Image 1 (cartoon, rainbow, N blue to C red):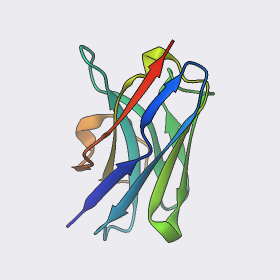
Image 2 (image 1 turned 90 degrees about the vertical axis):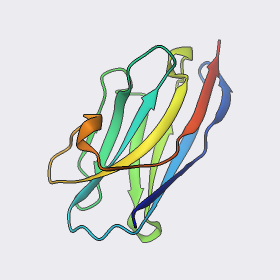
Image 3 (image 1 turned 30 degrees about the vertical axis):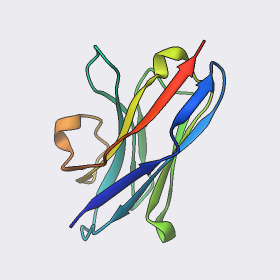
Image 4 (image 1 turned 45 degrees about the horizontal axis):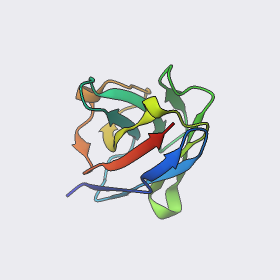
Length: 124
């Protein structure tokens, strides 16, 4: 059974940083991605970033490029999302998800399993 557990959310002032973690278990696929998505009240769910567990290839949403960095530690089955220069508009519930695949995709409906989410709040 695939399980994803997010951690690291919290409250921070504008310009601050947070690091989110996503620890996976039960994945038996040979090629897969871990993606981060966020959902703010009144907005559509947005793809933030994704990374291939196999070759480390990544993709980022336009709104976070240059500020967020995704990385992986395969020994710990964990993917990290380092978020710098945070803005109030980054406030959302952040989810990690996983999908089988060889190419980076930031479309939520392409992902098969999801975590419960972690709240990030950025104040001005």
